[in-house]
Amino acid sequence: MKVLVPVKRVIDYNVKARVKADHTGVDLANVKMSMNPFDEIAVEEAIRLKEKGAATEIVAVSVGPAKAQETLRTALAMGADRAILIETDEEVEPLAVAKILKAIADEEAPGLVILGKQSISDDSNQTGQMLAALMGRPQGTFANTVAVEGDSVVVKREVDGGLQTVKLALPAIVTTDLRLNEPRYASLPNIMKAKQKPLATKTAADYGVDLTPRLKTLKVAEPPVRQAGEKVADVAALVEKVKALGIA
Amino acid sequence: MKTLVLVEHDNTKVADATLAVVTAASKLGEVHLLVAGHNCGSVAEAAAKIAGVGKVHVADDAAYANGLAENVAPLAAALMADHDAFLAAATTQGKNVAPRVAVHLDVMQVSEILSVEGPKTFTRPIYAGNAIATVESGDEKLVITVRGTAFEKAAAEGGSATVEAVTGAGDAGVSTFVSSEIAKSERPELTSAKIIVSGGRALKDAETFEATITPLADKLGAAIGASRAAVDAGYVPNDYQVGQTGKIVAPEVYIAVGISGAIQHLAGMKDSKVIIAINKDEDAPIFQVADIGLVADLYAAVPELTGAL
Image (cartoon, rainbow over all chains, first blue to last red; front, side, top):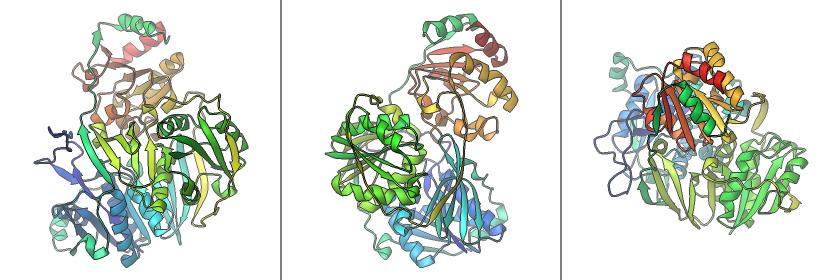
């Protein structure tokens, strides 16, 4: 079974995003970029399925600028077998990304597509579900545990209030939540080897997908800033404050 | 504009999250609801009483019993022939279903809106809430998820909507519900609680978390939350996590115990009305957003606080 793993190049998890002075977006100039953390978890899960013998080949895909090659090389260094970059300098919305992924899935015929539940850039939480709907296939979103059983996959999902387990007919789409696994670091020899692994570059036009955005961003602003209040000296003073709130 | 709101429920009662979505929908136009479930008559009845609702569409079928997105989305999409906007709560259920509805309509979804600025203009958080984008949809129909804490809850009583039975295609035949492990608790639900007591990594282990946080929460009738670090370390189950990748909360009072205040965590609770922080590190970022701060060792301070209340 082939596993397709879409990955996105985003601002690094440890960097605080700053709004541009002209309010047109977030300043990404000279900012450290990395693989979306939820996508790292997706790559790791695909590798574990391969190590268990449930998967045979892992294809990493990214839609983004030429530099997204670095992100794909990271996936290859972790253990993906080959990569496809759909190169574009445009901001591509989840709906268009899902349409590109659908076209690639038609070509590659993966048994599973595993991707992050959301990117930490636009926080949309849509691409996996959209891809599943476009393919007319089931989805296991916010996965906590994934087990391939014959021609189906059992996914334990993190839902409000607890966990839900669903059984999906393959091919299926899985989106990862934080606790699915802990992604490995790529070793130096594997980073070197990844440079030799195949990486194909394509365009959205190759797949006949229109990237014209449907949403227009009118403004990007800083959120309202909360002011620090006062520090109290001891527990007795805190008790008084809490009582004044009328909650105890 | 005619809106269709997906009602979140457990086949018994309407989830609070839906009430905030009704408020958001009412800013766009007429509000219709969709109850998709099984033996869910009591939900339809309760939904019809929500203030401001014009009509409740009820699809009662075993295929909808567990809200599987593969089955519910085509049903909702078919009803969208007569509606202009589809809205769902930005909960795990809403996030699961809405993007599939968007695909059926070939619409780019607007996720987790914070406000309605115009008929097709909304604000939404990006970059873990470090920026707020104002976006305008160019699509003919709208598909929206709504952040519950950003809108007042509509009154659960006072409405008298008509209830209409609808049928959909039923089981898409690709997914089955196996089981669920939903914690049964006497405590208020995290996202609708008035008071939350939250613990961080400083609580050391599951036993210490329980022994320190639970008595204070019990005393205040509060829900219990946790930072991602505390969840990752296994002190509490994952559905306790407050933060950008966990639950977004905005209670009247949020008490952060031993939580340093990482950006990720602040994004999930900074809209709380009053924030109280107890931390022994006086430079912890949590104090920059706290209304009341106490620099103290939590092992001494929390039991003393609990005892004095």
